[in-house]
Amino acid sequence: MIERLDNHSAPQRPPMTTNLPWVGLLLAFAGGTTDAYSYLMRDKVFANTITGNVVMLAYYTPQGRFDVYPRYLIPMLAFFLGVLFGESLHMRTWPQSSRRREAVASGLLVALLAAVGFMPATLNLLATSCIAFACGVQIVTYPQVNGLDVSTTMCTANLRRTGHWFFSYLQTRDASDFRRMLYFLELNLSFALGAVVQALIVGTLGTFSILPAVLVHLFLWARVFFPPKTQY
Image (cartoon, rainbow, N blue to C red; front, side, top):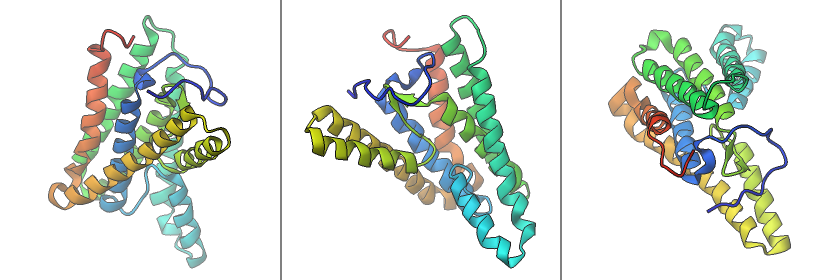
């Protein structure tokens, strides 16, 4: 079990299901699935990895290809709006508020991603915008796993933390630092596994290949209503 020792960056929020390390791995798997899906099925747009869209815009700009701007800018705006929506959920004061917020967030993610599966190629921009909005909500709703600040929709921050904790372990020989390093490595591998699964099924399922991500969020949504006795 990963210890709760990385407490120096994220603001304190009510606990979510992310006190369980394997939940973070599931979310990273879903993140890899949706990012690969948006690229392979929806006009080569990175709905999770917004940095990729910035690079694509920079690539096309010197060519005068301003016609591609909506393809990349609108999903970026959708991601931003998803973050705002996720933050707004934390401002609500409901009874059993952490469970209610998670129910709303998870239910919305299921609905958005499931709807994407039914969108034809003519609605690719809407599809990538829905995925980007969902990723913005996800990254705010699940900012930590067992006290560790994580990113479940991309790899860059987790790779940095893998290096950070490995260097710390080399300095201190503290086994807890090594466990942290392993966990961040597992997050990146889980993200990659999601992308691999997407690549394997996209040719068969087409637009419905987003199903694995839908199932992950559906499972987490169900856990809100049927939680283990030790969770909340």
